[in-house]
Length: 204
Image: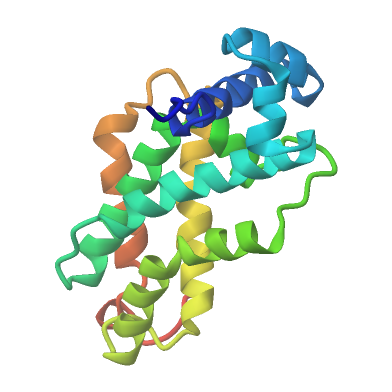
């Protein structure tokens, strides 16, 4: 009978989730491989076997965050209506951030000083925004959106969503601000602002 694997995918994900919690709660200095192993009920040997060094572990956190994020973005059903599809993607962005807030900080705020993702991780991160870029590229090419370079619109939409989500995650929105009821409205207003038929030129 084959010996059961102890360093499996379930343990890898358990360690990643706990590592993200440690960094989010007490900063990157709290990420001790020994403490991480103890918290997860495993050995430091298992941690080294699965990830290697501490920088490799942080890179794995970054990669896992974008893997989950990319799956949500790629799995979002689209309609072909540019505005509605941007709203849907923006909602998927928020859902991903709320589902994995500890990974979100590592992905987008570089919460670990000195950390630089490796080439494969960077490529994965870039790929996650392809659905956004495709929607905008088609809308500009078809004359639905203003004749503005698609990357400009993509970055502007990303910044808008990222700003709202970051304010929500850090608890910096006003208490009276009902995120659930107004988030979609804000996304739709932002996306509609790029429609070509609403303006003859780029807003100054």
